[in-house]
Length: 424
Ligand SMILES: Cc1ncc(COP(=O)(O)O)c(C=O)c1O
Image 1 (cartoon, rainbow, N blue to C red):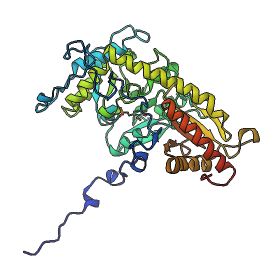
Image 2 (cartoon, protein in one colour; image 1 turned 60 degrees about the vertical axis):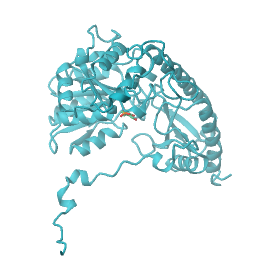
Image 3 (cartoon, protein in one colour; image 1 turned 45 degrees about the vertical axis):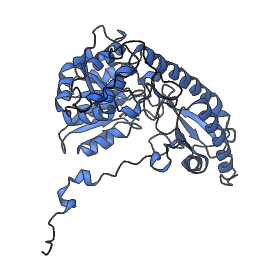
Image 4 (cartoon, protein in one colour; image 1 turned 90 degrees about the vertical axis):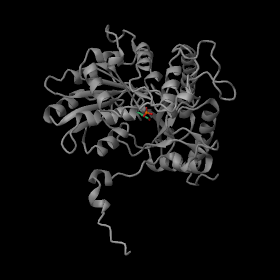
């Protein structure tokens, strides 16, 4: 039989906005997590998962009944893996509520009706877009420099972005008056994504500025506050419980950062019960796997929270060390943004600061590449982001990783500033 020519034409069949997407690429595609590299590029928890593990990395056996939510040992039911997981995750949601019911920002209690749990907070970012934005018609507002997934998810959903930059002259704070003006002028903007602490800017956004946006007198839209890094900020900073005072506020969090559980993919959105109901209705029914749910539940138990808090203290100590030591390296400039995350945004200069050096993307990119390719230390070049000329974003690592990073940066920068390359 002669094969007929297929009429299938992918370029005419697939959605145009999807055809324009590039497959996700990250530094890990080039620089592997095989023990040879110091990975300070993805703002993970360098100290490990917030779980009580023994020296072989196995879970410590709990003295409490393994099935109870208060135990420290994940209750992964291997024999039950032939069954679909719980689509509602009420017990896990209750633990998140207990964690965030601080009564600092609201007297009202969060309950599971306030919650959506997803495959990382990336799922919440996308679910919100699908919930509120009509493809090809509605828009979202973002405040660059900010987290890239808001833009990627918007493109996937065929939603345009209106940008109101952070105030690059004033520590990357929000510009609420400009946001309000922009929202007033365009009622197709359905959501405003605010990252606090910001990525890559590491600063908390002032609560009063978020409130100004929430108090917009006419805008019918949703304010999304992304608190992925909130547990590195001072205690009581999370606005999660505030969602009971504002019907159009969403606060997203994740177990990927302070809790050290990026591998299980668990994110959460706190919001008003009517919005949570919509998000829970549109999600895939079994989005949270049983092993993920068991590990997340265990992570929120007191014994494992104690591990998370110990690692957090160590990260904050190393963050302090970087703040002290980095400026001593010739060619390192200012820290931009804030210090409320597990990473820092730091400028590299074309000459030492004492000789009037200016932020330089050439030096920053050269240093990034030389460190990653020749010295096994991977950070993130952020010089192309608004207001971030010459910047590297450096995740705070363990004590040994920070030592190596400081040593390698000193050598590489010395070579670059003397114009003799980096193989010196
Ligand atoms: C600001 C911000 N939000 C959300 C995420 C996504 O987190 P998750 O791992 O929960 O999808 C990240 C990850 O780097 C982030 O930096």
